[in-house]
Each structure stands twice: as structure tokens, then as C-alpha cells.
Amino acid sequence: MAFSMKKKRDAAIPQCSMGDIAFLLLLFFMVSTVFVQEKKFWVERERWPVADSVERIPRNHTSTIYVMRDETILIDDVPTRIESAEDVFVANTLTRKKAEDPELVVCFRTDRDTKYGVMSDVMRQLQDANTLVVAFETQQRQD
Image 1 (cartoon, rainbow, N blue to C red):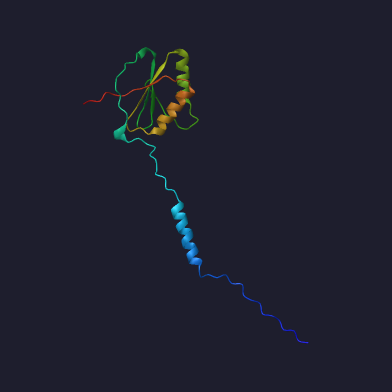
Image 2: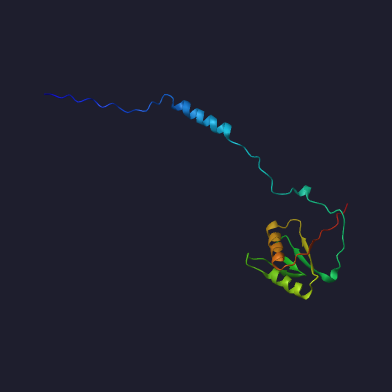
């Protein structure tokens, strides 16, 4: 007796509607995507705050920190630099000054073109030294 074998059918995926499905998926993702407007995290130089009044600070309980544009820091006219995040010269100096004078007011001055990273490091060290009374000094505008 002769048995005949059946031919195997090809299992092919129909590709006729593949383009339509891809186009519908693309359209769905384009419609459902939410675009968020980017926020500005900086202040334009023309819009910096301006002091309304000038207040004189008595100089007998003050220590002045001046940050120059080349990142040199002057603490009462003694120059230093912050070389790394572990550098705590400013904090140590101000901790000593705070122990000598508990009513210490730190006057903070910077050059207009000083990078903010250096100022941020100095302000962090002011917090570490627990000198929280800080006056930000400016020059009066010459109009």
C-alpha cells in the first residue's frame, strides 16, 4: 500500500498591512506625546535685583570676604583659594573668628564676573562655620 505524504504549508506572515500598522503607531505616539517647555534656571544680567535702600554695617564686628574674578578669595585682605571640595580654610578661619566675636557679621563681596561655583563653595563653608549672619555688599550705582 502506498501512502502519500501531505505537503507542508508555508507559515508566512502577511505583510500587506505592515505599513499601515507602522503608520498608525507613529501617529499614535506623535499625538499622545506631551511637549514640556524648558524652564530657565538662570537670571539674566539685566534683570538682577537692585537694592532699594542702603544700610551701613558697623565695622567693629565684621569680617569681609571678597571673591575676585580669578577665584582668589580674600578674607580680611588675606588671600587664599579653594582648591577642592575638601578644602575648609574659609570655614576654619571663620569658625575661629566667630569664637572670638559671637556677634560676627560676614560681609560678602564679589566681582561682577566671578563664577557662581566659587561663590557657592564659599557660602557652603560659611554654613559649615555656622556664620549665618551674612551681608551681601554692593557698590552704589553711579547714575
